[in-house]
Image (cartoon, rainbow, N blue to C red; front, top):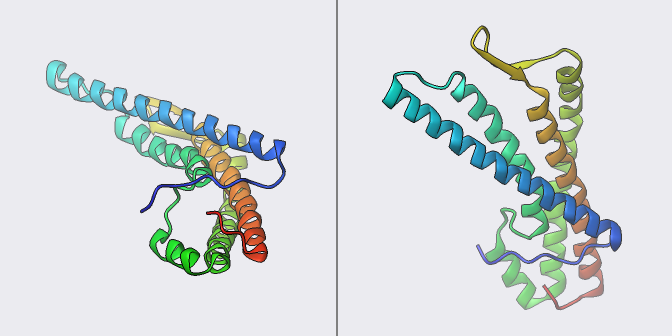
Length: 182
């Protein structure tokens, strides 16, 4: 995969704010990664040295990993590092910028639609976790509310949807204008 390139988004200052929010979510995802590393190491050390593991490690790590992925997704999209067929798109763009930008616009449109569907189905789950006190962990040992994990997934998916939509507009505009730049 070639190096990602952040394309200029429409809407100026609003797009800059959205990009800053994407960076903030990615930063939180990075902190979550460090937290998981600390938790897993504490569990391993606790098992090996003291014969006592950290309770509910597997449950917390499994919930946190999904949250971290969705927290970092908007920044990956914004930075142009989301998974796609760069070889095909770059080849098309070299032959004719409109084709490359057009395919990029279609790619981002599909991403927008898919994430819109995901956000649509995540919303009721977020409401449920907030109103019904859903938990994660082991009852009687360690539990914590599930809503922070669900909120992280929902927030990341919603912001990724917005970014995919903005990038769809940006690439479609470049395709229509026939701009040469990537």
